[in-house]
Image 1 (cartoon, one colour):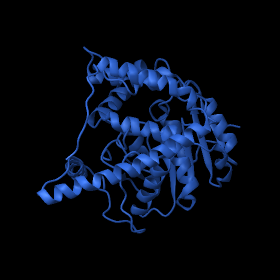
Image 2: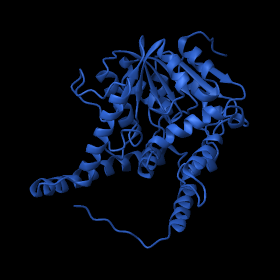
Image 3: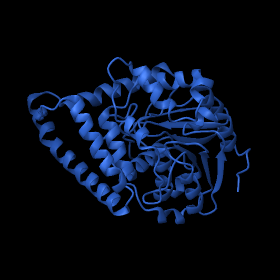
Length: 362
């Protein structure tokens, strides 16, 4: 049994207060000391949440029932089984060679060397262009992970840090039997990929960091309006599909939505199949806010390709340039007239880079 307190605040007022709070935090979030404090606070809250759950679980056992959290976990596990039975996707393994079952869901398809795909903020492992994904699966065994808070990992323990997300990725690779894999991370997925290579270097054979940024304080902030919209709800009179379409079209280069409406329609459909709840959005944002320490990247000794769109409005192109300078030996590839949605806007170029058939720019 849980107790909650609801304040008599109208939805519009609550959203305005949240927006004002985030605007106040945005300039502070560029300082490494603030990021370290956020990470510590997140870890502390995670321990407190786990501790508070124990009496509820005990009470449920004594009464022969289940807690709300346990019911949600069972519903999500059933959804995982159903998704696996309806597709060629492989369900999450019961155990891994290392003895630890991943706390997140993952799918795989294709043949060849293992390639782990890590998606961005609010997007699960099923949110990739289908044609682009099938193209990669002809060359690689592609493993897709649902990051905590999204997809079929919405009931994974929260809150969490970037280190937790990197450890999840390592557990997925071990559970999949991938001793050493290529890792492609898009946006927030690129941050997870960097942390994975730092924490578990033996598992990473090559890094592809796409439309992402270095840890705080080395990042260059993008459009605050685009970030704000990720927290918003559809306004009255606008459907969820219309809201998602306009929001994600703004992440791409100007004119992309008009040139490739089918690709954007597919993205909206994938996002709508299992939307990331607000709690997942907030928890992932906290993981990003608490991620810091760009000097650590100097210790990386893994072949790295940094890929960035020239007109990325969410993560400005200077972030890719900085990453390439911070990681020893990294090559930098800038794609003209491309925004943040690189797999959609320049999927062929990205696939060729992963296959090693495109040289890096100086």
